[in-house]
Length: 264
Image (cartoon, rainbow, N blue to C red; front, side):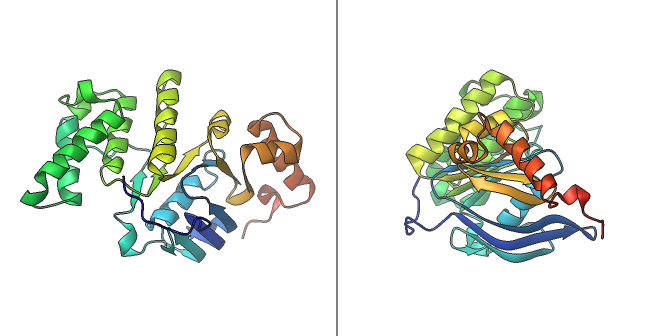
């Protein structure tokens, strides 16, 4: 994977006064944060707090976004970012009537068209299948795979273009503990050995401990943006989950709890 040179202190993602309205209601409220390059940033919070909305804004597919949002040094949604970002949604994005390898061959041809690129595409497909540990299922129909295996096919598709930024929306939801462990090991390999940045969302707080940096969301507001260690020290708690609950209680006590605000 070749990562384009950037100043070491330039964040992968930088947001100021970022807000999103959906259906006339605020989905994200005045967010300001950065996500460091070459690291895993966890986007944590309960279901419905705005995680998927924020991810769509980052990859440039979310409407009604206001404020500033820069991704890899360019405004979010810029055409030149398309080949530099890999995005995996919650629902597996694969064709059930194709095999694992056929799925990847199809998407590889879209990313890198032309007969001259055939050998390169084949190598990229083989590498991606190996990365997600599906070598023994390469010729199996995607529709006959388990939910976790289909999720890994989607991840393999995102890895085809050797992206600088991987945006993963709840990639481990519904997976067994062994597969969750293996996927997180892969995420760390991608960040540490290849220099890519990962933004991984989850509503499972114990996964926060696996991240280098955290964004904690609740009801569309950013409760905190820091490292797990810093959050535990700041709140004088033993776990990130306890830190999150402390911050929720703190917000309620200061009157900044969004659930206590009048609906507009």
